[in-house]
Picture 1 (cartoon, protein in one colour):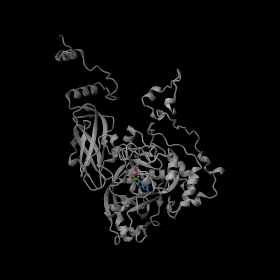
Picture 2 (cartoon, helix red, strand yellow):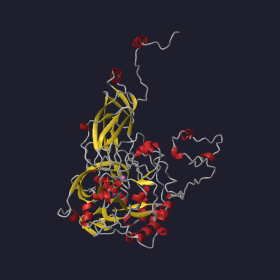
Picture 3 (cartoon, protein in one colour):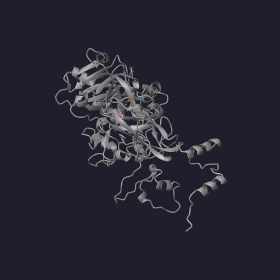
Picture 4 (cartoon, helix red, strand yellow):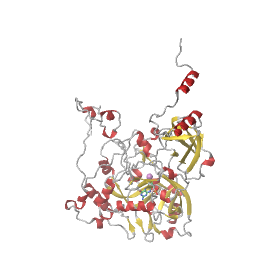
Length: 591
Ligand SMILES: Nc1nc2c(c(=O)[nH]1)N[C@H]1C(S)=C(S)[C@@H](COP(=O)(O)O)O[C@H]1N2
Ligand SMILES: [Mo]
């Protein structure tokens, strides 16, 4: 890798074969740094090999303690649940063990090419982290994958094998307004716990008046808690991240910033109770209690530390019954991969708050300082990047930064993402497709708005955004607070050749979407709320000349694709050419 291009002296004969591609930014992963500052900048490439996983158990890495004992699962019947938050010493032990190994760097999937495999990315480091810590974490990656194969649709697009992140193929996402469980996207930060519902209870503590533990039976006792069922769309803030990546690379951790397309969104009917009724049953929040922290049972890694999955929502959201604790998804018990036996469903918020394998709820004063709440899922201002995520640019090394800030107020230069904004996406046609049509193009897609707003008008453009046609109400699925609307609609397209199909949604508050990806681009690559644009090559058969030409292709058995290949047959015979030429205005003038 060329680390400093400005320092490079070109000598005759040393021209790399890919120089032209480098000049043109066609291999950005190999480009170096052009340092015009006059000050040397550290660009050391760390070539030390990663620890061989075979050595994790070797004598030199042996601990004086047994990871099966120290990191033992907390409770019988709760496979995949190690409690970290209650035991700082345990966290320290794991962090110290983690530090003894060297792990491979993340794959370069933004500046370099995405592999054409399914799973697209493997999650190698995450697998190794689990194996290196050992004990009950050792086989979590394999068990997670087995669960995926068991519970998810065979056609899922697996973006990341472990922690599992997968979305349904476009053709299946919007077939119906309620997403079948097997096709609902999955976004995991770790393994998939397997908790015996008989052994399960939910702990409610912190700033609540009467801390309690409630079993599933308690929660399902309708004489205490009214049962609710509600259609709710869950959308990951990473939905459509691929479009941001295609424009400009951002933070490139394959787990944190998985390269989602349009499918990290799904709608289900969730059944359970509202969190407000549960907190009320616990005597309400104490004075000063303004947020509730939600704990997920699996192990998450951040900056070399082990932790449980913890986020928070404000009490104001809970108070209006917009947070549910659900045990059913579309009339069936929650699939294990979606949080069995109990998950939160936070309506109209970013998916990250809808905690799966929910085992604890804690009343707190301020938004959680757990990293998923306060260091991830931040919406950074445009100019924030790798070197300036904190108000002072003290550290270039994110690992050091994490350790330094582990026990302090987190950096606050980004907005914590809670309510999702209005957004939409086209599911068909696909980007770069050749669409042969009769003057109207059939478009399918979805539109959604967070915070309890709903798509009030969905518009399509076949002219790159100059003119817009509303999707007829009859072509949109029913509106509800907290759900998307799917659509299949025909939109006029007079244009021929390359054009851009665009979708734009107006919600009931008349919020709409920025036109360009750059307008919503941010370092964490979250919330791609700009209008979804799909480039298509339009072939409009409603034009007689086009219909005639297509017929000729058909008669001669000639392929229209690839369109880049020159037409093989003569498209006009001499007599027709002369006749046409003579009928035309002359090419040149005589005087
Ligand atoms: N315990 C736990 N809860 C979690 C997550 C997780 O990794 N662990 N991922 C969150 C994120 S980022 C999203 S987008 C949603 C996805 O929900 P789903 O996998 O059921 O579609 O779950 C959220 N709840
Ligand atoms: Mo998410």
